[in-house]
Image (tube, rainbow over the protein chains, first blue to last red):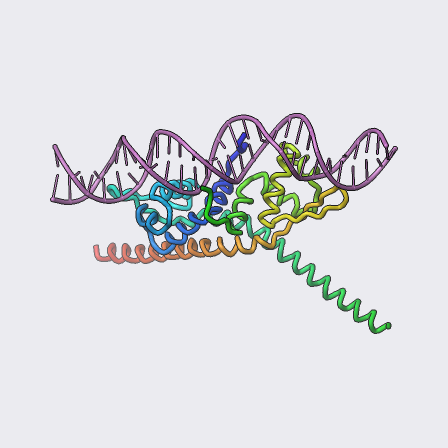
Length: 119
Length: 119
DNA sequence: TCTACATTAACCCTTATGGGTGAATATAAA
DNA sequence: TTTATATTCACCCATAAGGGTTAATGTAGA
């Protein structure tokens, strides 16, 4: 029955889990752009682009400034901080694991050398 | 027509865009666990848990070791590195933007003080 | 006012997701 | 061999996503 609760992280990670949307973010990192400009940069319809933009807006990654009939989109990378923090925990977990493995290998190598000495 | 291409980042971000799956990862960061153990920790069925695990496996975040009739799941945070790298670009983008804003405010403050001196 | 342009809204279609139940499979244990 | 346990498979259901097309809206300009 859908999800019990949608959090910011859900929307954030969900937003960036699509290649087209990541490409839109990359484009906006260069400069602001209008909807049509973004649409012409990708092999999808204007309408589809509009939907992707809405999802990015919901996640807080893109802000819109309406100037007359033109909608100018800007990248707002602020919410990425929370995602970065979440991922950082696992990145460290992984580094620690690698370090432990390395320590194990070094220790084992020592043991092997010891054993070969005995032979 | 679905997506033209599913990349590792799609699967990675898609996998962690669900709260239950993030909770499973957090649980596995403590210690390995069987499917049933994970299922009993969350208010969803065993079957649903199994599906979440499969999605985490597809993303490479969880590995499975079948021992007889028990399936032991382990966290593999390795793939997080790519996601961390991707996010880092935007985190820096944001920091630079903040720094630029701060510089602007400081400069403006100077201008204001200059103006008030003139008055 | 009439026309052209920018964007969204309202639909349709297909696939994936998140949830469920009940059956099937595989292994451990009696 | 029979039974119990662990997990998945095969379905059903509802919703959301990603894509499309064709209006509808809103604004700039002639």
